[in-house]
Length: 372
Image (cartoon, rainbow, N blue to C red; front, side):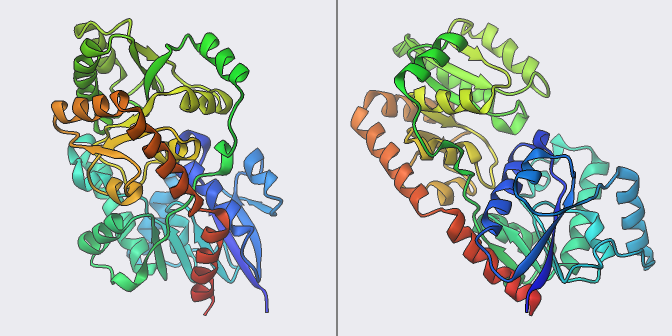
């Protein structure tokens, strides 16, 4: 007998990684069987419309979140917005799940505030802890993408290990083909990219570690002056601090900030890059690493937390707290073409094991558990 599955899709494109994770999950659900799927979210979102699933318009304001959490703590039952479904699935957390008696699973992507509390106001830390605690008490299963995050959930919230399921989500197949030389050169000219460059696509949050990367890059640039560093990310958060560091270190000519670029241009920049560098101090999973792997771009990355689990032997790892370690790994990669080639091949091979079909089979098992 077919079951009714509601998928709560509240992420928006501005969310970045969690939005792409949502789209990957929707893609994988095409490879499940026995479920009539309805999406709950923005009925005008073109990516959701493309899935072909019916969409029930649904939103969750801050005021509604506060009211749901207050009602939950007071034991007041609110109307169930998902009463038509048999089970619920959510790619990101939502307090609306506390309103339903239906079995549900939701994805908890990381507990960054536990590692860097200084980057969050006290009220946001307290709010997140209460929200996660409430949802984890009610959820039949919790999804995460690495054993590292699973251990965090178990440690910080005393959740039974059997209730936390590790299911890495493959990136969307947006970079499954290579662009032609003509396309690449057109992008190089349009964006004024150097012939050789490191690529770091990241927002300017402090834990993304741009400042140490710049210090390391200055050392690298002194030895390879034809190498550039290309950054993306919106002009917000610690952007001004990073640009001041560029000026202070005399790197104005070598560092190129592209701001926001479209998908086709992003595809080309990955393909043109000498290597992807990922110096982040915290990652539960790094989408840029997967994107580089898809195109065979060598990866040099932080050897911390969940990144070693994600990359296996397909990246050269460094200590992101040591400038000398970052610069040494970068120099080793750009000076050794055979190493760079091997890293690129290992990355491509690693991505062959991560498919929407495989992800769909894992979701199938999870959904059957919820149904049972």
